[in-house]
Image 1 (cartoon, one colour):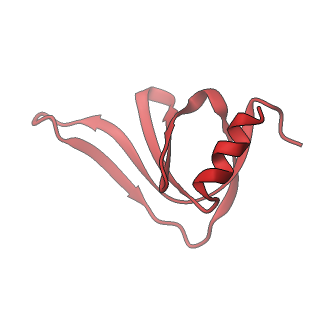
Image 2: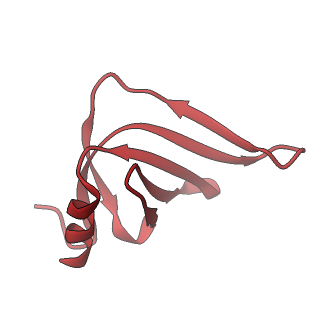
Image 3: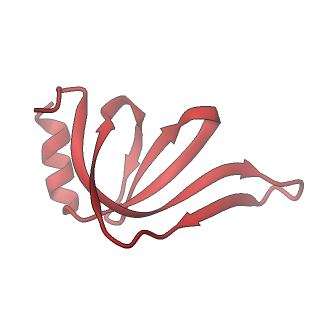
Length: 82
């Protein structure tokens, strides 16, 4: 069972923000996967949640936009129960 520091989410495609180029435009790597997978996400890495993405911080000052399969309300409930 996951600890209270994590939530278990079914994630799929994601986008990694690597930073900005010399013209101040985002450098984004788009990753498409064949199938969704369960992932434990550490709660203190979550920056925000929208109806489409979980925005998380990552090593080396990168940010990842994860698409997820649960509903927005499911995620709110998971986080409020921690």
